[in-house]
Image 1 (tube, rainbow, N blue to C red):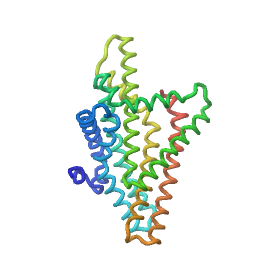
Image 2: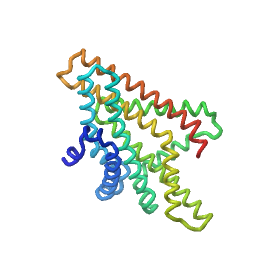
Image 3: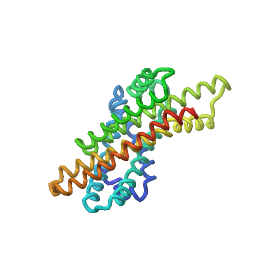
Image 4: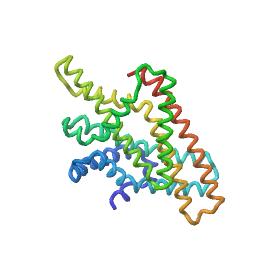
Length: 282
């Protein structure tokens, strides 16, 4: 299989930024094949195609992280190695977001509405559930609770399906991209009505603004989901590994528990930023 040999965890840790471009390529290929094969169901098919392309790397990463857990008792070293894996996975996710967002912005409205149909419905349901004038603290707990649920799903998916957490993360990438694309298109409409023209500078400024609007807090949330996915995947690999005895399994579970705590802390930071900081700029 091509994608199994395209990039290895060792190389990804050394050159994490390469995964950003790989994420863009994966997202574009996923859209192209979904429109070609299943044009009426492309909004979900493209997510599954991204998952299929990313699974070999995700699986190899989880396997390597589990082996590192078994080799060393130094928790700080383990966290450092997990951090390297987290770094290139975040670059991969950002590549997904950029690739999907660019497609949303550059292609005709009727094509975009079809490709991102499920994602736009999700965004509409989320926005429809917001209550105007709600207290900030109430919003904070609502957002945190929802993010903790997503983190739990990542943990469970990774435990039962190994690299399964990549599905939730790929889905989130498409939803964020639809939100960014909608923000840019709405902004372009406002500029056109005010000034009567659109240009490259306006497109670029709105694109950057849209990314910042959702990624200022989103980067903490996505990092938390990846950390939870690593934790669940590491435990999953250790459980099915017949060479792992109870003592080693306890060590793996301890390391995974530390990762879960880190994920919860990241979600707390993300919720604070989303509720109290992001609104100051947007």
